[in-house]
Image 1: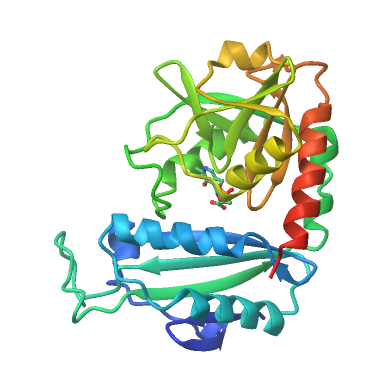
Image 2: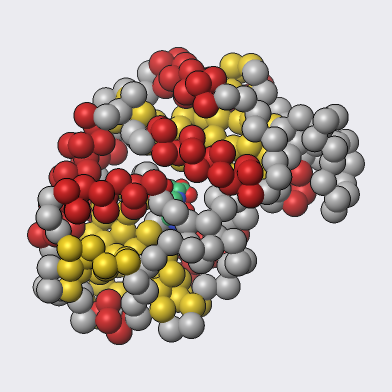
Length: 286
Ligand code: PDD
């Protein structure tokens, strides 16, 4: 039985409760973060805390506590649940005004809801999929226009994962106006002629914390990075492809819509970036 955190209390998961009028439950009016834990330490915590603050700000939502308090809660949950490798999930919602109403409640009288829980994933960094690579399908991106805000509106990404599964694949890449936006829960990249290509930041994609770190490490290692969008056809003809996220780090993609990418096996650039990312981010873990 896990210990979880709800609005100031550490509780057994079976005793944790949130109102049925909570705006995240009724309106998907909430934002979240997922931070990985390796060797009992938090990876890229500062980036996740900063992005959370940005998501809250973009939605005129009140911060439930300070960044230092958030860090303390993360650490306490990791310790109480004896997590060596895994994830910490955090969600902030606009809270409950005790009824259903499209209008936002007054933040002076309605407190945000803050929930955190851990997911134990022993050997998270040694995922077998990193050795074989994953297969993806492409799907039309019909999500809303502010994908840079990390909201809990995840129905379409869930449907995309199910469609991928049904097609015998692992994940989906979303496509808008003929160009890949991002993966269902990760950022998407191709490698061509040694160049790392990934869509530029905008409202169209989530500004991945892993993306920021990986691009920084790539540049430090003298690799060439080009931030621009690319088509499915370009990806199918690339030398390599991969995705990044807090839960998969750097994950090679070896097939897109049935077409093998490169040799159809994980490529050297993805493998190298995964190695550098894990090594460097563990050094900076808190
Ligand atoms: N997803 N794009 C989307 C749509 C995502 O949902 C995520 C993360 C990313 C990668 O962001 P980061 O590197 O900060 O994890 C990109 C998390 C892991 C999730 O929903 O579980």
